[in-house]
Length: 120
Image 1 (cartoon, rainbow, N blue to C red):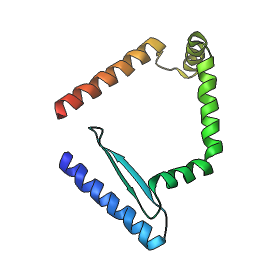
Image 2: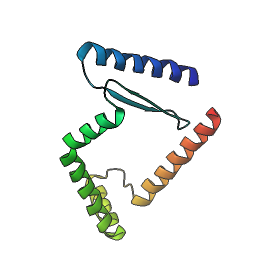
Image 3: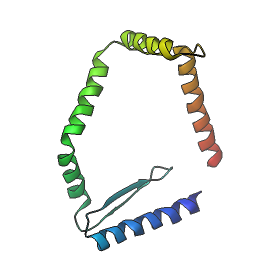
Image 4: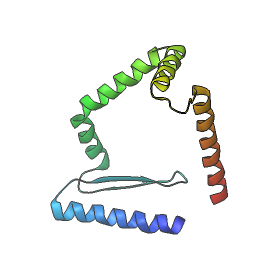
């Protein structure tokens, strides 16, 4: 997997460089490996400048997302669970409960951790 990752990462960086040169575009590329190592590429402009420009252009979208997340945080957990349960009841064919969904999430997390250990 590491060899495949390295080859594909290098290919992606090469394509980003080509896009930058051929189209005279500012390109910023961030890649994070499974081990958490960060790889970056930027063309022409500094990576920080490109990301700042992106942030300014999409500032309204980012503010809307921030307000939505804050709105969710202000509601109580009990209200949120009731809302989720009511949505489940409306569309629930298999009679799935919130508890079974939480157990499913824990199972998926445990499976991911196990696969990561096996890979190591």
